[in-house]
Length: 210
Length: 309
Image 1 (spheres, rainbow over the protein chains, first blue to last red):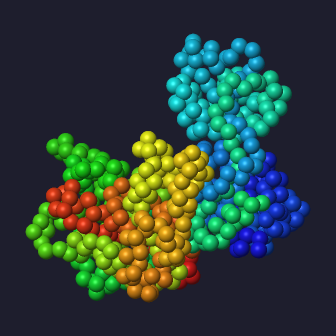
Image 2: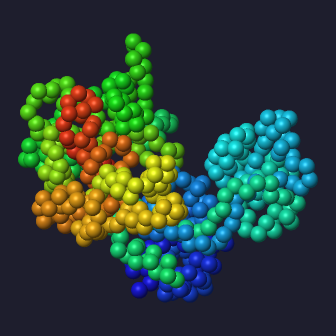
Image 3: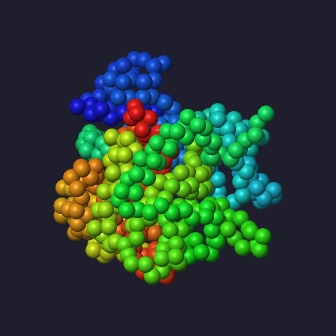
């Protein structure tokens, strides 16, 4: 039965293990994916693997019928034309605003300089949050370890995703505000959602039951 | 030397143009045989005219000033200009009126998304023919046009813009709860929709917009009577192309009844769409029911190549 010919984009990284466990429960053979770290396309199983932030790109274009990625990614790429079908509850984490311990340097900057600098991998989600809460923030987009930015004086605060808060703590950062909660979602291409409606609906039911 | 053109616009060279022409000529032949007269309107219109009644419906992305300071806009589709033509140039003509066009429309684009700022549309407007007969005719010509264009695996998604609002009415959903529910539907977020309707206790609000498939999905949905009426009028060759989609949403604001979208498995996005807009002409001073559709010719071409033709 597996995926009934549907092609699914699967996120590499933190979500991958739980996603493959879910697929196992659906009867998809994920042994090859687990055994192979470099291969990206698994035709027999109907799976392609990629960075979580690339999943909406492939699904929107129809290169994959379905995809699994975090709500954080979907919120950041909110203009993507994809259906959000199911909250899978996998990989729960929070998007938070954090600064170094002690006196809050971001609040100080905001009071004295009128603007605070914030580093993040999620520039649009961060900008929306500070607009909504009425604070001026200069968003600095970084691609690598965000925790480094406030420790070096690049910024006063960061907006980042955290599951346990360990990495933040280890770098001497404290959570000042929680912005949003995130879990993995099942998304679908809008054309596949019509042309392969029956197969997609059956899969959604099986995931709900799994 | 680099002389750029705006993102989302492009030059068409002879090899591609020959193939695009083959598609548009084939569709033009269908329009002619079905009695649709081709018209052209200016790409530039007065903003005050185009946005008459509903500025969201016209949604012009490009505005400029003429030498007198009047605001001109580039048309974002052909439906509204043709509504203007009907009200002014055909103010006393006996309906139904049948028009077709091959014209460029202009939309805003989001950066780095490969979206078209300027797109070639082939479409028709059937004015003064109410549903369900007018809708069935428009769908029939649509399928004939796609057949003539050489597409074999296309399907037409058929929904109704008024279906969900009427469902909200029947279930007496409080006005205050509706904007958020509709927002989740428009953004295609069924997780959000489930969250919003949970407290209301009406499982139909979540189930109905996810119904897609053959005519059997209309069973037991009182609001789907109009769609059933359209289906009963379709020739078998058209009916077999239809996928009913009770959650179908179109992004233009003027639709009042049946709406449709055209899909091909070779393309990840719709190739075009349309629907009924029974209130639009009244805003220009001539109360007539109408429906129409437009196909994006460049996307048709991509789908045709994707089908291996």
